[in-house]
Length: 179
Ligand SMILES: *[C@@H]1O[C@H](CO)[C@@H](O)[C@H](O)[C@H]1NC(C)=O
Ligand SMILES: *[C@@H]1O[C@H](CO)[C@@H](O)[C@H](O)[C@H]1NC(C)=O
Ligand SMILES: *[C@@H]1O[C@H](CO)[C@@H](O)[C@H](O)[C@H]1NC(C)=O
Ligand SMILES: *[C@@H]1O[C@H](CO)[C@@H](O)[C@H](O)[C@H]1NC(C)=O
Ligand SMILES: CC(=O)N[C@H]1CO[C@H](CO)[C@@H](O)[C@@H]1O
Image 1 (tube, rainbow, N blue to C red):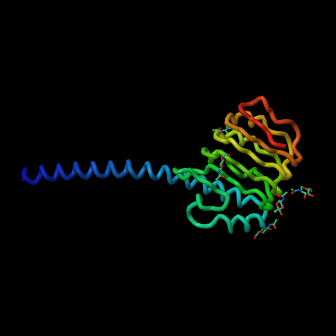
Image 2 (cartoon, helix red, strand yellow):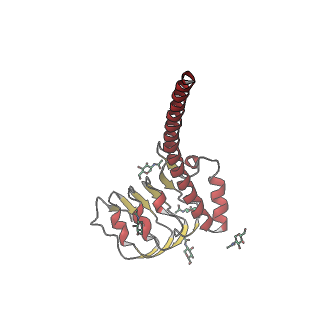
Image 3 (cartoon, protein in one colour):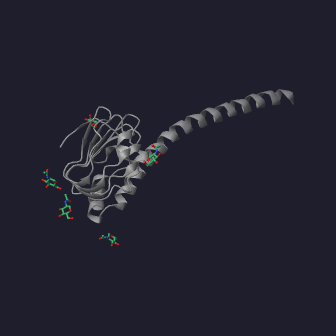
């Protein structure tokens, strides 16, 4: 009886170790997958808020399961988006539904020369890694949100040719602006 029990205990212990290590492994990789999923989901949510023709256009650019291969998207090695660059696409809509909280690695946002309108959302301040912001040649309106001052790494900002009032607080960081 006892000669049966010992190997059984050992085996039980080994199974526990295996279960434990595989769940640790699975949870770290699934957290990364969850983050990637959130970025893609946030992009698709923004797409769904845009004008119908723009949705059709983006649906043709954003195909395949890896959002890092979608048009206008660049990612880092961890598959987190570093650049969103969609200039000259005739995109029509607002930034209201683009949840910047889901883009912790975003360094470059270039939406130059589209037909985007409405205010520049204050939650743009969540893009803590942003260095390059180009929203020129659109129909954005309202004031420049003061939260833009939270973007300490910003090196270039271009908001020209919009209906924006107020001025860019140039005293912040290493900022330079392009007209
Ligand atoms: C966009 O398309 C949906 C369904 O395809 C339609 O219900 C809606 O009215 C359209 N919106 C505009 C602004 O054309
Ligand atoms: C702006 O984008 C449109 C396409 O949406 C293009 O035809 C036009 O040449 C672009 N304008 C400039 C100044 O680049
Ligand atoms: C991404 O943005 C950074 C910061 O503006 C820039 O240096 C880099 O060239 C951009 N990369 C691509 C692929 O657009
Ligand atoms: C901005 O809006 C005006 C009218 O509201 C329109 O005539 C103009 O073409 C728009 N510009 C862009 C770049 O979408
Ligand atoms: C985490 C973070 O930066 N959250 C901020 C996102 O932007 C909103 C609007 O500016 C802030 O209220 C949050 O604190």
